Image 1 (cartoon, one colour):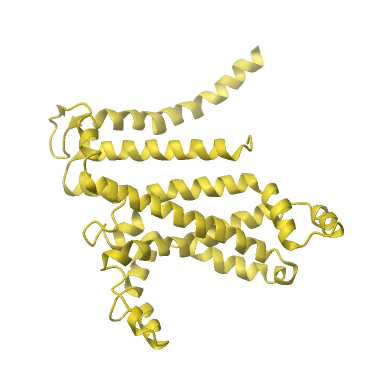
Image 2 (cartoon, one colour):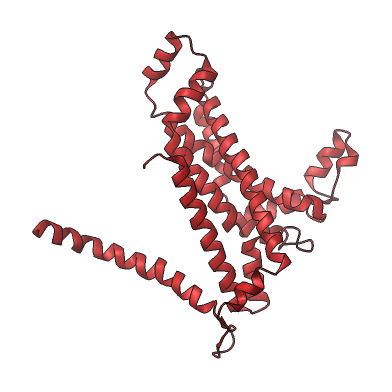
Length: 289
């Protein structure tokens, strides 16, 4: 009994931190979403769930949600799928001696500031002086030169590509760490039984790193619905609302239109979406960990 009381005493500080800095802000955010208020006035007018009704009839919300879903799907394919393939290649015996070099090359983009990355790619996407169009023209594909961030049909894909460039290497490093913990005897036994590299990848590598796949999938999906920095820096949600995501919609509502209650409602929706997605992924994985 005494040991249990001591354990509770050690847990209380961490519990207080979680309550004060995580759960309390969530509750206060929902509370604020039921009022009409702005940053320059102390007056609050109770509107109940009016902002949520408005949100679900707002076409910009559905455009933003569609872009976030597109962001998540593409990120899962390229960051998780591509990262898994890159990690498997780096674990090949013939490549392993060059692994430190490739690890560094793939990991560097993920440690760069999002502001720096956004500005860098914004310059590269410039239609007249950007290196991307200059390269396309240099190899003879002049018809494929676009104002990548200025055209509604290409802008969202151009922004999404930047995230794939920045984070695919990071996810690959996570998988690489997990793969290096797999006992080599499993592969040796499989090879003796006649399994090729593809079979060992499917039947040994993937099952052995399924917890890391869950972590990467959850990290990538939640990140796709929380994305803000690169979109805001590169396009601010434009042209029109072609690259609008929930994060930029929240920012514009709160800090440009000064509709803090509406912004709080958007924040609540983002929280609900990310919690549901995380819960579903954990359940679907059935790892038990």
